[in-house]
Length: 422
Ligand code: LLP
Image: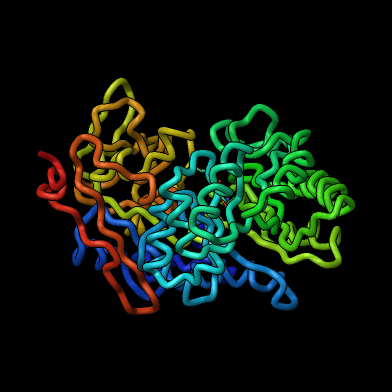
């Protein structure tokens, strides 16, 4: 049985088969394809709310902030759901701050990380009155101090400390190991805080770490938390008060059967007991939106070559780059229940690259031309990382809530491809 169906039955996901048709909430995928065409990203609003609630429930009082890492999915329709739930936002660029403000996020709940914040971005963030900067180098701190001085404001900061912990995930998404470009080296963290303490326009507010993404084990979080606690103890002895402990994001989701998702409570359990008087920030991205979004596509052609079966779809690596980029696995389901014999199949896209595939060696029923396929669990880093490569217009995005279907991004056209070109 497919894992999505199992999950739906457990009440955790919003996909189900009814009379042979796959539904998201109360809407048939085949009807979405009819109305909006394919390929198309489809999200479940109730799944987003459920995932957010799992974070909310770890706070007993109003002692923390859930800052949605909007790099995972920055569609305005998605962001508006989260801002309405009271979420904050974790941003990585001026553009993300702009999107979040437009989507109604309270600026006092926005944090801003990133190793290369430009002076324009810093100025924009200060003028927008965000909660704090997660500072990744001393030169960046100097720049923030200078710009805050010019604007006659104080800038709240946390240092992003690299705790040198191996999160045991794909090498492209490890961030908290020695030698990574992210954050302040662990051994330099205390002196960085002592340096920041002397800056006139800087207010030290917190400590931040983010060790990586798609992490399925709580142990690296526990190790990182202990190492960060040592820094907090040491700097507080030296007269620096830390108000916020920000543990980043990184909680892994279940992409395949053999995996077990990591839940917010497992992380809270290893961090909260370390402190008596702190506010906590989490920056979840994937664990809020991955299993709420799916890429619906259509079989354009079928062929066999070199003894292999291929399904060629209208979604390509420009629409979902994760399989090509991270060798990521996304379960692929035929949207109509199908009793046909299953054969080993490569599901590939139309792009001129050998790495353009959604899945390789998948056991899928023999499908007809125009059959619909769902590339599941693609809500995080799917649409957000898509591009127009091969001059393919960006896909539409649709939000489902019960029986209600809303278009939250319209399909781009050929004219959009050349819009800003001379
Ligand atoms: N906070 C910071 C500072 C981050 O850099 C990230 C993600 C997050 C929070 C959210 O992490 P999450 O909860 O989503 O794991 N494109 C890759 C993942 C890149 C992660 C980048 N940083 C992928 O598709 O797997």
